[in-house]
Image 1 (cartoon, rainbow, N blue to C red):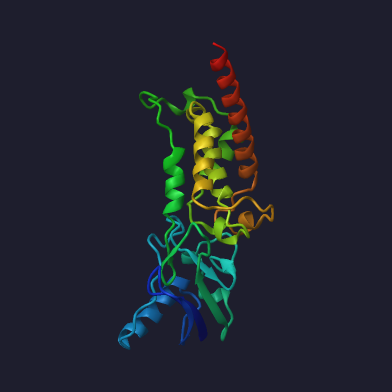
Image 2 (tube, rainbow, N blue to C red; image 1 turned 180 degrees about the vertical axis):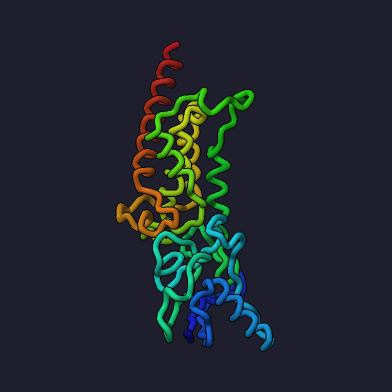
Length: 257
């Protein structure tokens, strides 16, 4: 298979970027998109040119680092996969393929196709964890959790923080990511202890970092490689409203004492 690649090249965060065109030939339909980029980089290096910088780690759909916008879609034309799980058979022979980095204020470009996604880490640092002392590890069956809630918590916990939800949203919102992180802890008894503080801190941090608000287009759900439901956003909103009301009530009681 032969392809024409239109790839975003940018030397550093302050440099002006541009789309450059590359031709690549005799590509097997069974290799992954990243393996195709590896072949391109080998050709560029052999010519004395700079290789295309792109982020990757596990190449198994787990790490979430492959922040590529391919032909106008996060992770490419196949739903429910990350870029490393995308194979060249998803394209037709002779296709022109546009490859760009995530476009969001909170995800500045570092170089070429690599973006700084540490904003998602800072949201987690604001409260996406359980810090209370829960003692020794109990047997699983000693903490009864209804199956619908455990299933919903597990589905939300599959979020890998890739940022596709941000890249697909017209407002560059991170609400599906935050909703998933809030939901999987809020649904389990271990996470309920700090639920009020957690959701308020994480939402506040999300807003501080420059992410937009939910646009209600469901694009985040459609492009999420783990197919996380927007119901996580609804649950986060309920948790946030309940937390704000609880905090206001606590303040009124405290002021009256």
